[in-house]
Image 1 (cartoon, rainbow, N blue to C red):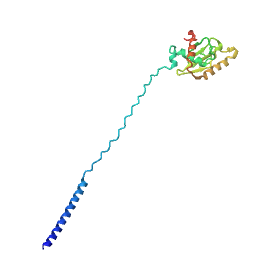
Image 2 (cartoon, rainbow, N blue to C red; image 1 turned 45 degrees about the vertical axis):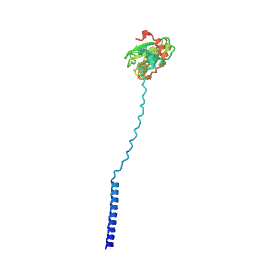
Image 3 (cartoon, rainbow, N blue to C red; image 1 turned 90 degrees about the vertical axis):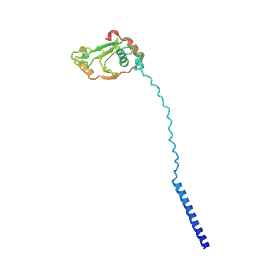
Image 4 (cartoon, rainbow, N blue to C red; image 1 turned 135 degrees about the horizontal axis):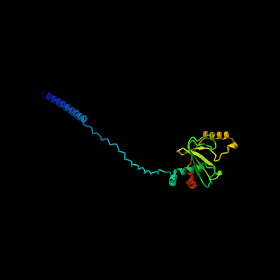
Length: 203
């Protein structure tokens, strides 16, 4: 009887001990599962260092005038025009005088021919002091170009060539003008030709 009691005691004690260990193990596992995991702080993205701003060099103020215009600033625009036109289109550069003749719109191309062609616009006729120097007859377009009319400085006499022939020649000149771009030219040459302008002929 006593022996059976001891056996029952040991069995009950062992059962309780095993149950207690299992409970403890489950508790620890639950505790481990519920533990808050520590979050590793994400490193902040590296801020790209600001590049030093490139300071644009201050733009130099450009002169409103071109270098050649600065050198010729003491002369009238019309004088510069006459010199540049002759420098490019004049037949003889070795002139001793540059004459300027202003011809109004509607004037006869050949004053000796009342029925000949007339200028459709005002023109300027440049010439030297000699017939060999030739002439340049043009209308300034105000944009660096001129309308060139191939008018001779001296016409043949109607009695020699014939009035009809000369009249047709004047009409041909008016029908076939040529637009020419005038170059700036060398400043020294422009100044030289301005110095040769005949003051009495420029007005």
